[in-house]
Image 1 (cartoon, rainbow, N blue to C red):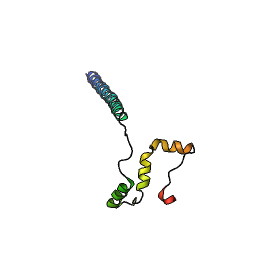
Image 2 (cartoon, rainbow, N blue to C red):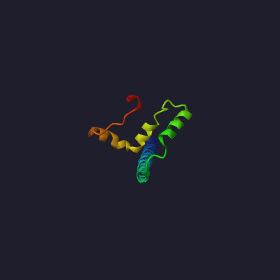
Image 3 (tube, one colour):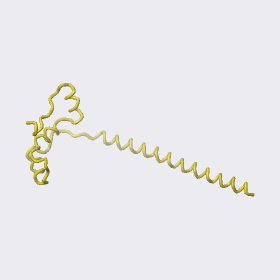
Length: 104
């Protein structure tokens, strides 16, 4: 009698572990496909055109916010014109580095 109870208890434990494992794997698969779909949507977006704020406007915003970056509007505007991913490549190929205000 006790062997039958132990056998059923083991069967229930194995069933519970199998269902739990299935739920975890299924959740991972669903999450992977959802993330892949979301990243493909983000890859389609691009920014076209130059910066929409002038250096003076950026300086004004920094001043209104009490930021220590007041006076760096020209640098921010220059950086917005250069694709961030290309900057290190240009520097490695001997291209000009942007001049920072404190280096002038």
